[in-house]
Each structure stands twice: as structure tokens, then as C-alpha cells.
Image 1 (tube, rainbow, N blue to C red):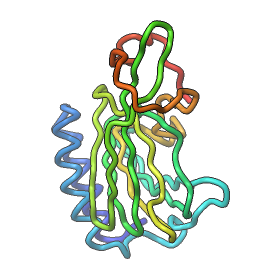
Image 2 (image 1 turned 120 degrees about the vertical axis):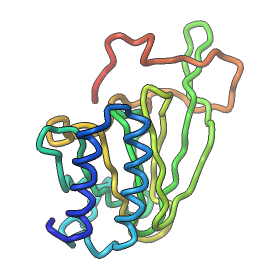
Image 3 (image 1 turned 60 degrees about the vertical axis):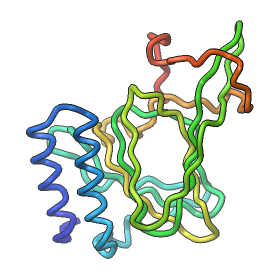
Length: 197
């Protein structure tokens, strides 16, 4: 991956993570850099555009030499989706082709019962960028929003080569229901032994 637009992007990212430590500020500036990169979609080589058959496919494109950030292409066929999950680090997503649907959830609890309450839904098309910064409650699910191939770029503040995934924890075992009677739960504060999937 030595296309000039991507080289420019990684140089800007290297400078950013070298001078800035605040996750929200890194995410904000990264979203601007990613939006600019998406204006030249031809930078992404064909080998990073290949889908998986049974599930979305992750292509690791670049990792900062010290693991301060990673760039990943996710490729989705119609009907493919992530599990419901949160993230290890800040995450900036930009759609290169097709469209994504994002569903965000709130974890709620009453007595000994926990469930996910739908919070909001968004759709993103080519050139659109969104961001998540833990420990804000960032539970979501992402899926292909159309009937064709979708490709999105994800920039994570973690070494994905080391971890294998940006997913911190999955929540697919919980029921989804539009019930706001329970208390919102900050799982990061309460679960000292967070399961890493």
C-alpha cells in the first residue's frame, strides 16, 4: 500500500499521534484526515476489497510502528453484520463504497436482568465518517445497508495486528427490547474483568 494519498494519510496520522494524547482530539482530527482520504477511493488496492463468504472480512492495511493506531478495511456482502460490540479504543469509520447501517444501544439493568435498549440508528454512504471514543458507552452493531458490496475504512487507536480485532466485548447474548425502565449500566466501570473476544 504505497499510493500517494494513503502515504499522506499515514504521515499525518503519525504526526498526530506523536504530538497528541487526548483520545477525543485524536478522533476529531483523524475524522478530518479520513474524510480527505475517502475522496480518492482508488488508493485502496484490489486485494483489500475482497469480501468473505460467510461474514464480513477484515483486511489489516497498516499499523503504526509503535502500535499507536491501525487502519483496517472491512468488506461486507449484503446481509453481513458485526456482532453487537464495544471497542478497545477510539474508532473512526469512513465509507469508501456502498453503505453501512449503524445501530447503537444502551445497556440497561433491573434486578438481576440486563438487556439492550435501541438508542439510535444511522446510515452512512460513500464519504461519510463517524467516530466512537470509549469509555463513552459505545455499544453498537454495523451492517451492510444495501444490496451490493460495501467497503469501509476503520482507524483504531490500537494495534490490531496484536489484538486481531478492535472488539473489546460482545453483547449478542443479551435481549434487545425497547424498555427504558431499567437503570443504564456502565459496564466498563462495573465489570472489572471484562471479557475480551
